[in-house]
Image (cartoon, rainbow, N blue to C red; front, side, top):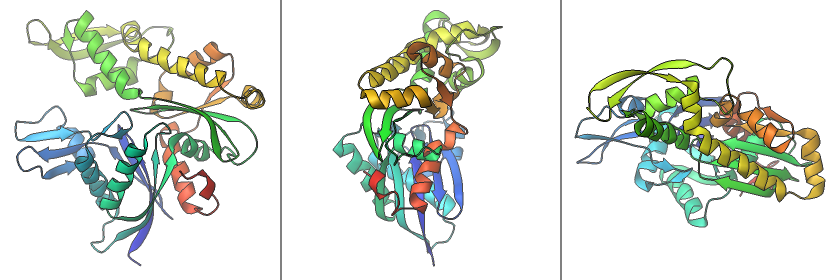
Length: 332
């Protein structure tokens, strides 16, 4: 009566929770604010993000996941527990089963860290599923058919590329870069070439509003507030989309190259299926302007942006949760 089953997309940038029978009930940043002295949790999720880069010496904001895996075990547990409490209002509520997605390329030790964090946060039974598999299920691909499907999930910390057939991953490529790396690239580029220090949130806004993988017509200009790197005085600069594209071009090229590598390792029959069916893009990074076109031009295969790419992984994880016995073969 007081227990429930949940699915979790534990992401580097955002964590999404799906409750069985209710759907997606939470989508919040993977950020925790703690007291530096007592290590007590002050805020979790959206409230913690509002404090990020605006704290005083007594408060620290931490993102416990780095490159798609847990970097701070204790804080990750606090994050999962805090977000679940937002979903589970009743004080007697407990979690019977949890399906949680993980990058396909993580180590056994990293898998154990995810499982332990979930169990310590209150889950009685934990199931793991690879992110590209969850994304493929979330966008409606028939993963159990003897047909090749290729999925590219560009998240905050990792980019997951996989060829799926018969409920298994045939070929995969997991690279530890994504939206966070792009934000860092933008931050470093403007510090180096424009003598302007900008915060993480400003870099993310630049990526979202002026970032692109290909040339724009017309090019955009956007006002940016930052700190002059030489004088230390706050300044306003007008930045072009060409400058933003130059900043993120290295990471975008690495992602396109990883897609090419994965295709080179794909068996010929499955490669023929992909040529016919195309490549599906999911994840927040897939929304970067022109990302689909860049990959399409590189591999000369149709590339499609999935509907609602930001929630593809949690929708797939939720579908597995709803039909656990039917999807037993896709669990890790």
